[in-house]
Length: 182
Image (cartoon, rainbow, N blue to C red; front, side, top):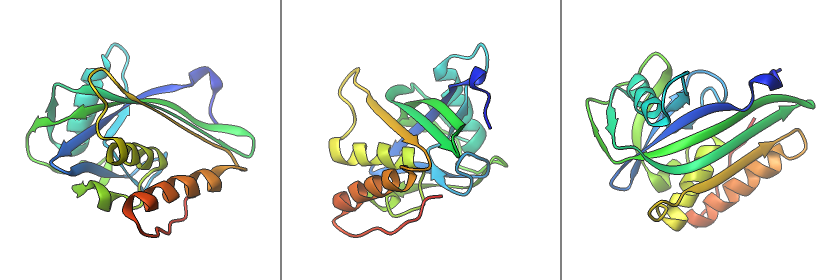
């Protein structure tokens, strides 16, 4: 599985909002290959978090964000068969100003802006689902505030955590949602 000496891995996410839409990418690589999430990736050595989120956004989508604002800290831990599979600390930044033409890179399968509520009906990662649930339910964090999100999965709770997040999304939408998370 994963060497605990290299954990947690530090990553960034770009929460790009346009009116009532959010930019999502369909992931090509693990974790969560084939699922939609906010653009993002690993922080490189010597790179600030803000530099990393602007770079990752540009690499994956072709657009260049400016003035990223911290919006959420997300801890994601996944264990399978008693072994650690993933452990990430994801620092999410809000980006409301950007330039360039939206285009997908080789790192992703697809990219697009989606209505926040409609995004809850898509196959989105659990961390992205929890972030969107918070944005719809509570709005953007107040000045200097951040969401603190934790998703901890193991063989016993994986389905229950997914069901709870989907239940929250269904409550927001006022309708049933059916998904199976792997």
